[in-house]
Amino acid sequence: MGLAGIRWLLDFALPPRCPGCGEITEAVDLFCTACWGKLEFATGGCDRCGLPLKPGELQVCTSCEVSPGPLDRVRAALIYGDVPRTIATHLKYGRKIALARTMAGLMKRPLADLSQDALLVPVPLHRWRLWSRGFNQSLLIARALGRPLDPDLLRRTRATPRLKGMSPAERRRTVKGVFALRNGASVKARDVILVDDVMTTGATAEACARLLRKAGARRVELLAFARVVR
Image (cartoon, rainbow, N blue to C red; front, top):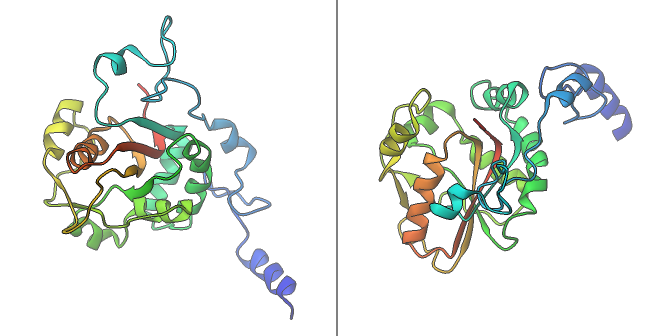
């Protein structure tokens, strides 16, 4: 049996399915019509933080002009909603690691809006969470993006409670001082793109960015699969 025959048998036994709902589709990573229609792409917005601009704001929103923060630019593929939540949850807790490739495919469009020579750095998990989950979803996504990558440049020095349900101020306090650079690592004069699955308030990414800035990084940006827009 040739390769075409083997591929036909695999498609018959394990047909490609919609990443959002599991409905059988014509090709791998292809969404069904219903799920595709629910996706809201994160386009336009502030040149720095990527959030929607308010009336009277031009390229940069008022918040970024007044208090820029440690991230030079933030981009995401999608606005967080039912379908992105399902995909991110199935990757993290359902161990459907093939979804990392699907997520990365959608993230390549906003990636083109970030520094082209930057080093990709996944937001790290604490070792206890990494052991229990078996993988870091941000690292899987970063690898699928196909850019230069440092998989363990950053590390978490202590475990933290889950941030879900915390206020932005509580999140910032929880992750303050949690991250460190790998021993002997240098980012001096480097551009870095942090990679994460979901951005909620940005507290975790900003904590990473502050550390990288302090270590001499020239520019720090964030690329996420989805972001919460309130």
